[in-house]
Image 1 (tube, rainbow, N blue to C red):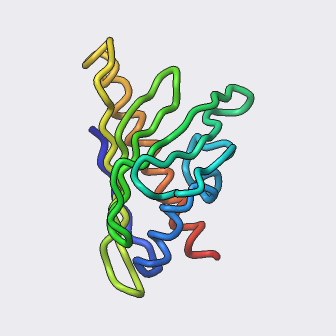
Image 2 (cartoon, rainbow, N blue to C red; image 1 turned 60 degrees about the vertical axis):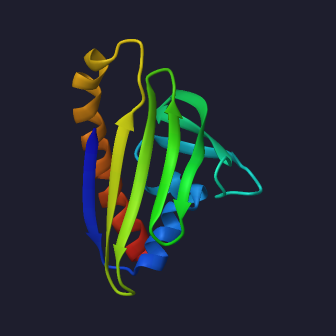
Length: 143
């Protein structure tokens, strides 16, 4: 499992609004290339958004689904970035109207290769999420 957190110099409402708006993901989430479509009932549990993930010309279409939402506090997504990643990502925001801490906990779902993949993926996901939180801070603090 990968766990990252970062303090942002914006309030909880602004940070959570950004995290729960998938159209912002290409601006701050490392690997998110484009959002193709968002369900009309987003972010209700079971709703999805479809996206392209990858690096450069290597892009894969996939989707993410809301598993749970506690507005202003927690968003839990079933994320897919095939062919390599299927995971549950939990975004949590705590703080006040001036500052907050955003955390990302990402747990791979069971895969055929099991713990062999995790040995490689966990550190990689940790670095990606660290960079994503830095980009999130820059994005929300500049808009």
